[in-house]
Each structure stands twice: as structure tokens, then as C-alpha cells.
Amino acid sequence: MNKAIAELEDVTAGYNGEAVLRNISLKVYPKDFIGVIGPNGGGKTTMVKVLLGIIQPFKGQVSFPSGKINIGYLPQASRVDRSFPISVEEVIQSGFKTGSAWWPRLSKAQKARSTKLIDETGLSAYRKRPIGELSGGQLQRVLLSRALINQPELLILDEPNTYVDKNFEGELYKWLQELNKNMAIILVSHDVGTISSMVKTIACVNQNMHYHPSNEVTAGMLESYNAPLKIVAHDKAPRSILNKHI
Image (tube, rainbow, N blue to C red; front, side, top):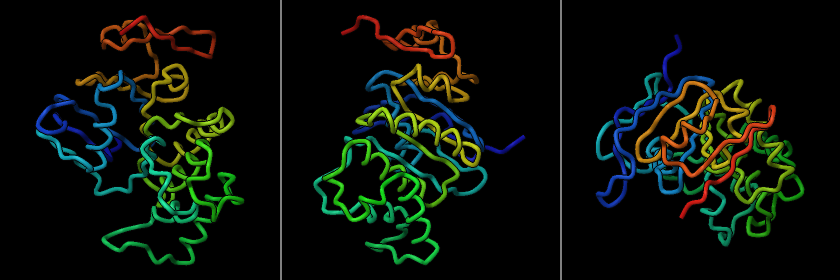
């Protein structure tokens, strides 16, 4: 059996001494594709920050049983400062940054890798353009390229379909399925219907975690988790609707 590449063990975490996550555990294996769902404020992004080492848990531990791994991270586009004077190419290449150096000195191979990703994501015409001039979909392409630049073993995406045009959304999900052949993926999303058709397993996060070793999302699962959602399945295209809630 494969060894886990990342593990959260009995983790409690939050901010300013107040717990947002309580006693959650999760193992991530090579080529996993885990969909993370749950209500706003339930702790999904906090879980991601713990995995990335951005915040330290109050209790429990984060470990990498197979040794330290490269993790690619695509943040929510709304969290990016688009007024910062940096170009598309510079954002993508910043993914190579290590240590305290302000800007990495790139090898020929790294420059070639950057150019390849820029071309593959359709950003060649925007290479030198400031990120503040991009559409939401274009910015997500840039951030995804940055997340992939170091060829990670684990790719984490936090609400990747936010502010994204529908054309790129379809391309993104196809690309993720291809990437999953070579890396583990954690996809945080409110779009339950879409992710349930492509992920392999699902973690419901609402302070605690319920892990489900399949991609089937049932109404009972969501109701037990106080998530204001219902699933309506139409052949192979499941859809999600909101219950009336405050």
C-alpha cells in the first residue's frame, strides 16, 4: 500500500486562540483527488493553511511521512492584490522562489518551464502585462501556472472557479484530471455537483471533518453536516441547490 504523502493528525486550529477546526484527521496519498466541501466559515481554508504551514495548529500535528514534498497552491483570486506592480511572467516565475532571496535567479530549464506553462495556459500575449489588467479567468490561469511551476507532488486549489469564465472552468477541470495522473490534488469548492463528478473522495469540513472514501455526495451526508445544500442528480450531471437558510 502507498505511504501517505501528507497527514493531518487530530488537528485543532484557528485564530487568536479561537478554534475553527477541531480534532480533524486526514491522510493524502499519491494521486488522491480529494474534494473538500462545507459551509462558509466551516474551516476549509484554515485546513489548507495548516497543510501549507501558514498557520500552526493549537493541537495535533502535520507530517509528511514520505519526506518533505513540493506543494502547489492556487489561492482564491479575491485574495490577490491586483494593484501590485508585477507582470504575468513574474508572478509565474515567483513560484521558483526559495529562501529569503527577493527574486530567484532562473536556470535555462526553469525559464523554459515558465515559457511552457505560459503557452499552455494561453497567456503568451499577456506575458509582460501587469496582473491588474487581467480578467478573473486570466488571473486564475496565472495563479495555476505559478502553482504548477515546481512540478508539485500535491496541488491544492481553494475555490478555483471563483471569478472564472465558463470556458476556462471547463478547461481547468479537464486539466486537473490530466494532472491527477501525476500528482495528488485537493480541491476546495462550493460547487458540489461539479466536483462530485470528478474527484475520487470527499471531505466534509464544518469545524469537524467527515471523510468519505468515494465521490458520492448524498443529501443525508450534507444534512448531517449542517451544510445548506441538496444534491439533485440528472444522469451524469449532478447539480446542487441551496436550501432556504439565513
